Image (cartoon, rainbow, N blue to C red; front, side, top):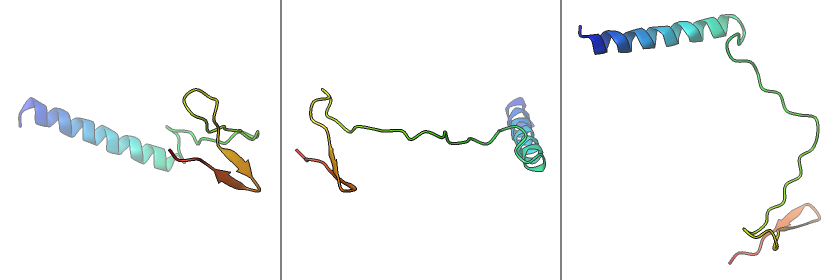
Length: 65
């Protein structure tokens, strides 16, 4: 085999080993993400920030142009 093939197979093997370690450790390499406690408010506006979408009685109203 040439060097490129050996290199690619080595990278694949390392990736498979890392995935197995992660699975066996219950997510040891990559930790779980947790949501924050506070509510985030978002305004949907035009590019200038003057005309924004209206929220009324749990409905979102957006004027299409």
